Every structure is written in structure tokens, then in C-alpha cells.
Amino acid sequence: MGRSGARLLFAACLLGLPSWVRAQEPAPSPVVPELPPDELDFQGLTSITLGSGARAFGMGGAFLARADDATAASWNPAGLSYLRNPEVSIVGARNTFDRGPEGGTANDRFVGRTPDFAAFAYPLELGSLTGSAQISFQRVFSFRGNRTVDKEGFALTTEGTGGFDVLAFGTGMQVNRSLRAGLTLNRWLNGYHQSRARTGSRRQRQELDYELSGWNVNLGLIWTPQKSLNLGLVAKTPFTGSLRLARERTDFFPVNDAPEVITTNAAERDDVSLDFPAALGVGASWRPRSPLTLSVDYTRTFWSKGRIHNFFTVPQTPVTPPNARAPDPDVFPSLPYPTLVDLGQKDTEQLRLGAEYVLISGRVKWPLRAGFFVDRQYFRSGTGDAPRFKGFTVGAGILAGPFLIDGAYVHEYGGYVDSGEPAGRAFTKFRRVFVSLIYRYGGSG
Image (cartoon, rainbow, N blue to C red; front, side, top):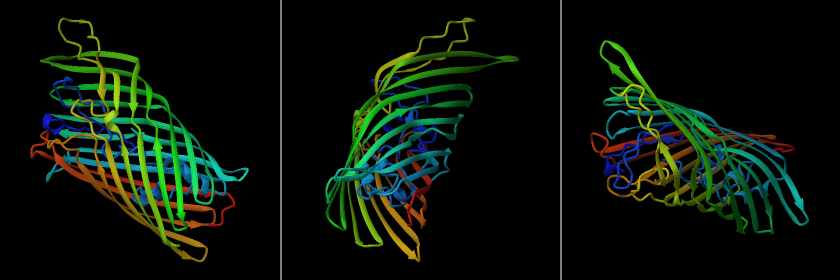
């Protein structure tokens, strides 16, 4: 993207995150004409094997083989087999990022808060099998937040609400003493709204609405070859989601000594579709001593297969002749997603390391956590390679009786060649804060 002078522009929170999903300005290419600042930028959020919860993110997100609480279905549904009491889990997130020229001041900022996860799990016994069933809500990609871009010649403000959500129905069972298996059926639903205003020499306002629907499945295994060691495997199936996309564009034209001229253009299509990729993850978790847990995960999401079909933009309505007819939308039969540019979108990879140590004081437990990760992105920098960002995490919690309260801080950073910045390089910093509350009915800590 840097080779074409592209600027990745963030839009709304995902995710707060996941989520902190961001808008992007795709670059011109021999295949695709230049598009206006628009689509989603999933930098730092492209591993759709990642789940939710402050405990997991405090351990760097290395949780595929250690998922054993009410957030398990979002990581590895086989972990639901550990639950022996009904559990309720609620997670919230705050997300921020800064981007700009390397060595300079950030000119692109975002901040947002979002509900991230909520679940209820209930234990089950089916003959010799034990485990639990769960219904959960997860905001996989969040667009809720405010973003400001202040660059030479223009300023951009974006307000976003909503997100791409998953309602999951899952179960995990212990098959035998060493093997656990689970699955979730996921209903992707909802969408987001963005209001975007551009100032400067070319004033413009846009309103965008996306609505997504689709189905996919998560499959998980946890194998315990010895009591202190877990090995985990999770697979998330690809799917094609249906999108309804509506756009409205307003342009403002200054006129000397007269009121400005305003033109509008709008369109809506319900035949847009989005190919979400499959994802695979493997992990290991080792407990050399009872209070100490060490974990490592590797995940790969096949974003090279991500596509959007029948995506469209609405052109500017001309000022002259007066009352000119609004031009028809520019429709693109198939584009890579999320880059929207045919420059060879890459699969993402994450290597995640984490540790947890539990301090015990009477009947109260105080878990302390830390983690580190390396995160390969889906886009190509000016060198032609996909950049790798790095990050660290810290977290802590308190377990008293049936209540478990956790907090986590995630910091990710990276620099890459980008010809769109004056120095030829850009930096990006992401920060996420998670707060989780788990209540275990009948639990005693």
C-alpha cells in the first residue's frame, strides 16, 4: 500500500475491536480506481481466532489451550467442558490509537468504548459426558467511537456506532480423561453507522450504513497428555455474509459573494456480500506449579481469501448544469477485503506468549498476568512485505467467593514504510483496556 502512496485511515472502534475497527483510504492500482476514504482497517484485529475477556488478554491472548471460564466459547469452545457451575460473564473495552509520521506527532487519533462480550453458561451431563452449554454475545468488530484526522489540506472527523456482532450457541464436553471437544454455532448480525465530515478546500459529508448477516461454526479440541500440560486446537469456518449497504454523500461548493451550492447523491444495495476467511489456531498451556500457568499460541487467519462483492461508492453530483441528475453509483464486482486494493492481501499471523501467577491470601486469590505478542498484518508496506507489529499486556484480578473481577491493558505498536507520510515511514500505536466480571453460581473461589 505504501508503494502506491496509500494512507490507512481508521474509522470507528472495534473493536472497541476488536473494538477498534478503522476506516482506510485505499490506494490507486492498475486494477482498481482510486477510492475515497472509506472501508475498514483491521490492523491489529485481524486474528478472528481471538476472543474476549480481561483474563485472556492479560496473558497476551495466549488462551486457546487454557480457556476454562465463561469466555471460553470465544476462544476455544472445548474449554466450556471445565465449567461445573452456572456462570455469567460481562466484558467491556476501551480502545484508542494514534498514527502519524514516524518521529513526528500523531495526526490520526481514535477513542471509543464498547460492550465487548456477555455470556451465560450452564453445566450439563449426558451419560458419561460432562460439560456445559452456553449462549453468548460478542462484538467481534466494533465501530463505536470518535476519530479525528488532521493532515495538510484537510481534516476529517468520524462518529461511529454499532458493530459486527456474533450471537453464539455453544457446548463443550469432556470426552474422556484427556480429551475435551466443543463447538459453537455463530449467527453474525447487526452492523454499523458512520457519520463522516471533511473540512478544508473540499468540504464533504457522508452517511454510511452497513447491515451484516451470516452463519459460521467454531470447532475446538483440548488434549491433556499429562496433568500439567494442555494442547489446544481451534478452527473457525469461512462464510459469505450478506450485506445491505446504504450511502449518502453531500458536497459543498463555495461561491464568491453568494450562498454555497450543495449537491447530494445517495444509493442503497442489498446484494453486497462479504467473504470472511477461515482461521486456525494452536496453543499449549503448562502448569509447572499449581499457582503458575505459562501459555503460547499461534494463529493464522486467511485474509488472502477475504473479498467484498458489489461494493459501491456514490460519485459527486456536479454543480453544472443546474439541477443535474445525480450520477449512478460506481460498482466494483469483487475487491479484496479489507484493503480494497489488488496488491496481494496477506494472511495474518499471531504468536502470543502469556503467564499467570496466583497469589493466595486466605480465601481470596489475586492473579497477576503478563504477555507478549507479534502480529503480522494483512496489508503490504512500501517494502512489499506485510509489517509485523509487537505488543505487550499486563493484567490482574481478584477472586473472592463467586465473583471474579479482572482488568487488562494491551499495548501494540509498529512502524512501516509508507510513502503517504512526509518522512516515508508511519507509526501506529493501539491501546486497549478490558474489564471483566464473572459470577459463578454456587462458586466458593
